[in-house]
Image (cartoon, rainbow, N blue to C red; front, side, top):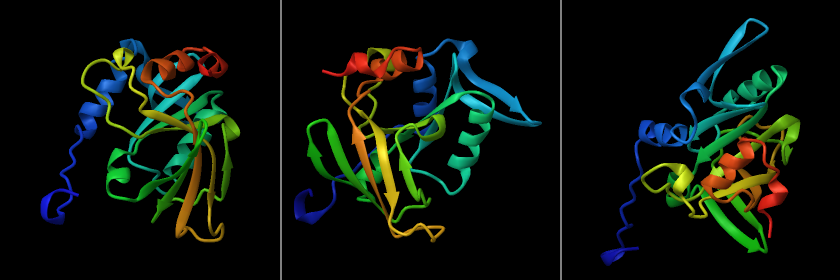
Length: 194
C-alpha cells in the first residue's frame, strides 16, 4: 500500500509486446506455425521440435485451454502453456500461500476454468506460470527467476463449470526464460535442478 492506503500502481507491457518478446527468443520459422489435424487448424505461437508453446496473458479461459491442448496432443505434440499471471497476482486473484523448498502452494480465487484434478504434464501438457514481469530485451538474456511450473492443481467442486477456487502447486524448474527455452529445445528438466 502506498500513502493514504492507496494501492501501488501496477503496469505491465501490452499483450502484443509481451507475446512478441517471447517469440523473439525463437527463429522466425518457429513462430505462429499452423498445425492441422483431422481437418482443424490451430496456430502454435512457438513450435520447436515436438513441442507447441501457447502464450496466454492471464490465467485460464473456459474450455479454450483443453480444446487447444487436445488438438496439439492428437497431432503428436507436447503442449507448453505459458501464462503471464503478474496482473492476477497484483489484483489478488492468484495468491502465494506457502513455499517449502522448491514447491509453492497457490490459491486462485474466482477461477474461470474448472481443472477438476490435474497433475504435472498430464496428457502431454505443461503449464508454466510467469509470476514476475519479463524485463525488456530478449528472453534468452533474462536470468531473473520469473517462472514456475505447475505440478498439481485441483478445483474445489468438480461438478461446477466455474468453481469457487482452485489450488496450484508449482516447482521452480524451469524458473528462468533461458531454462524454459532450453527445455523447449529438448534439454531435460533434471539438468536445471540443484
